[in-house]
Image (cartoon, rainbow, N blue to C red):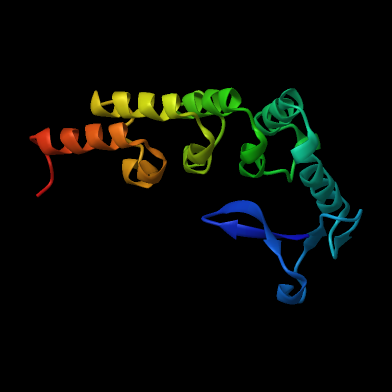
Length: 167
């Protein structure tokens, strides 16, 4: 499997690419070997770490996330969003809560990359707080696909009851 580094909405991700889809002058990681095509040493290290992620314990992935969030230069080039799928729900919830409360060095937009990986309880809590008037800076429309039916219904009733709703 080959992984291609792509940038979506200013965020760096690794996506699977079939060999016949490879573009000239692009950097790829070959997940089944020890080499990166046309990459720098740092890219090779990132590729190796990315290949190891599915095999790491929750504690190791959490440690990696912590180092990335702290901006440790030894972990430069590893994007936090790329490790979210391998993180424990509790660790994702903690980062999510920190982002919501502004207690993180991360860009606030990181929250939208994290939402698919947080627990239903964390999302339900976000809805509770949003309805109470907190976290109004969150684009709630972007999280509908990740909410359970009850939370969607609560948001719907909230929108119907708002007196200051835009016409």
